[in-house]
Length: 284
Length: 275
Image 1 (cartoon, chains in turn purple, brown):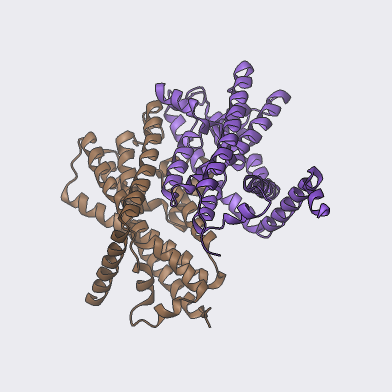
Image 2: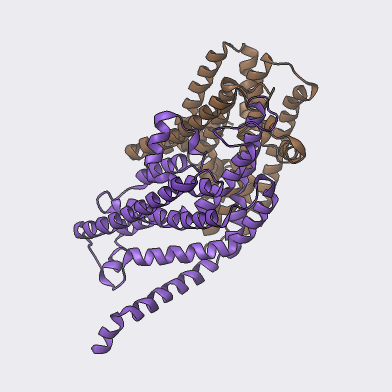
């Protein structure tokens, strides 16, 4: 019996995590060609955005190429859309919330309750594996698109900005994960949450800055969106890279983003604890 | 012909009965798709806060562009309500072998697989499109005459036919590819190019895209031609603009004929997946 107790230490836990990560990576690599094609196709909407904004800027002021919209030149705007694609590659969690809700509804969630595996930890590792494979496969299409569109960038930002950008992307990933996991666990109380998730997806698309830079929102609308965590999923990392957030505002922004991660990390744990206490599973 | 109309009516009625069995879901789906349109409209309203028109000198001001969006809503919501769900089900029927049952029905297979189910909740967007179009016309102070209305409806029907042809052709490819969800994604990504007026595609790359999506895969004429019929009478015309509606009729016939031919070849290659 002692041998069963011993592995419960940190080395055993690390070995378990490593195994989970390895299995998830191998699972994801099965569809690498589909991944690469899908990634390349996701850039097609950007093409229409480039032309749409080109037309918009041609009509702004005298259209001499120096026109700006809320401080964004045409090149800035296109670069912004490309960078939000990178942000979303980190923060989007396709199928996470709906998967948790489905597991609750069909009773599959029981496996996390009867086995010594932490559900959120497992899902986080699974998602990290998914993202690692995604970045490995998507690196080609991303590099190609960014190379073709290099003219829209003013060059690489300095080292400190790049470090802040990397930090904001990692925080965006964690925020996206814990936020969506919390949303999915609402399924403990309302079995069918697909409509709720669709509404969340709508809000997320609009207010994360994926659709346009939130600087465009006038007055109180902009203030409200800036007070919400969603804009840290797409807008904030892109704005950091473009140098739209600098100095104290950058440090403050990263701190608030980290605080939101902490809030949703704790909230997801609380919701899971309350949910599993509420949950009833029947049958074999 | 009467028999086909009756089958169409029965399919539509059955789908409505099914949708009404899950009323809350129906209402939520309608609200969801309307919310998506409202969010997009919000984005365009924001754009027009900063720019008087889309493309300098193109004539696509805010309300002209709203007419364009309204036309797109009419076409897209009809395609979504009538054909989208059936194309998805067709790809699945090919994979699982459920298509066998459709093949033994004494009716044209393409017709039956195209209209078996209706997604009535998508028609919320159709009503919104009509309301938006009337609002935009009111703001422009333009009342279309009867000929304009008839031509507009004709070209809306052409747009629906072109979208349908593209969709059914992609779905038919399932027979050769086994599973075809990525190809239906492809339909979504291609039709994105039809969301905006063709005048935005400028420069060497834009010129190639405009030519390709007008003459090779004619999605650019789907919304542009009917929308221009309402907006363009207010603006000067070029010779090319006048020829576009004629080409749209030709393209519609070619798309319908081509997709029909492809669908028939696909059925000939179909091998049941069931035991």
